Image (cartoon, rainbow over all chains, first blue to last red):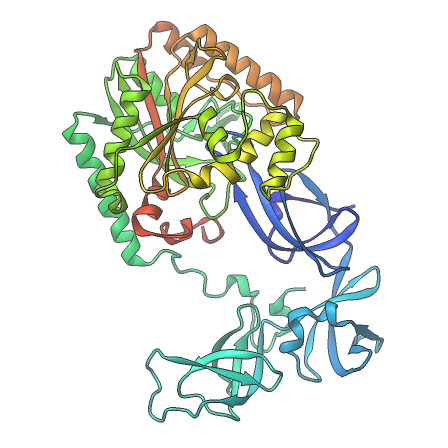
Length: 189
Length: 338
């Protein structure tokens, strides 16, 4: 059994809380001037999708959740869920809406992403840190305005809405950081 | 598997290595920080307080249960373990015992495991001592220093002095000297603060202080929390009230704990008892054993002036002066980039 100390808590670290695998979303260290330090931890139960918050004594240990991240190719979506394939084994996995979470707004068919397996069952999906997506809809671009600081909303081909510079037009491919949801640059391809 | 490996076409190194050589604090903030250091030097020079430097590495460590010291090895034969200070208190008190008079210093202090929005394991501490003063006189000087450095205190009313018990009664509806652990646990849950019911009473008080009481202090003025329970005395004198209280204070601005001060314990026998109690409690909890400061005991035995002292988190002072939300905005290289 691997144990995880509160010092190792980071967003994305997976621990067992009350028997269920949980993903740490936020971890805030608080300490009164003198005395016991605490970590206020916000975590998502990976089975139920529910978010909880609790205070944990700093230095306490937790059992690491036995979860495995595997690179898989996103195949298609149908009424039953989102389908992925492990390119190494050709094995296919189905992920529920709850398991997809935010990932659904970043993925195009054939994209490779990280699927989290808990006891062999897919429970969550992490998109690549950066994705290239086409702009499906945005206000018309301002010609010549390539440097000023303004921004506008753009809807990407996957449905994600991203703040982009004013000079971006419909049909352009953009590089987006999925961790922050922020525009990075125009994609080169 | 890291993001870098997954998209090897774009990256040759894991993403946490890429681009993070830069300081996290804007250079403008580092200039403002340097100006605040200048202001501190003038403040203490005008008041005739001597600036001193003491070692960061010492043969002894803080015995406080809630402080974790870093250690390193001096390559002598046999090798010696030296401890990085968690505050300059031990050495500065030896200067006071030697007759230094009022002293201050701005130095690095180190506390393992303390990292967060207001904590970095290596941080900068402002500490000063006033022989012949009690903690109330020192609170007044802390307020003067905060007024000299924090623009938001311009025109603020005089500081509020709030006893620990009164603060809990007023801001958490709890009597910290009377209510039992189960009551504290229940009241905390009612206030939206969830912990574990099996925690001892004193840990509930620590949690309620940090999460419920502290955020309400220092709003529109400086708040001094004082007269702590005897169990929270650390290195402060006890006063024989009923129940007895520690002559200790903490200073708050905008819910941020900035400083911790004492009417300093001068009795070597009481100091020795507290060291022994700390070491026994460390042993019981399986915490690392650390050497208590024998030289401090010798200095107190030699004779220690009646005196008040305070430690102030300089990084937090800069945060407040600049309106920064995180300590990373006021230090060049926090621990993850060090």
